[in-house]
Length: 56
Image 1 (spheres, rainbow, N blue to C red):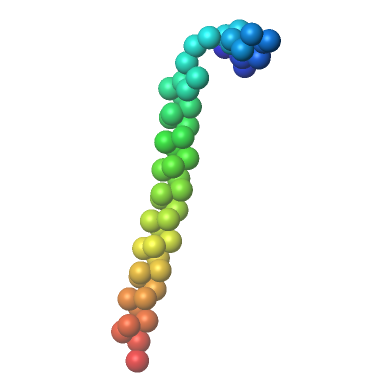
Image 2 (image 1 turned 180 degrees about the horizontal axis):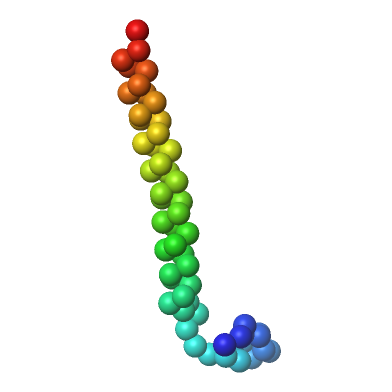
């Protein structure tokens, strides 16, 4: 399945799903990577703040 080319009448040469399941899986993978990074940074900052609480 290739990229649909626009034609003068406004119809698609390759009619079909605009968003295919592989696009959704790719989007979910990217979102999981971003979320994992944010969770990792949050936990590391929380741990750093906990360490500094107990230092004299």
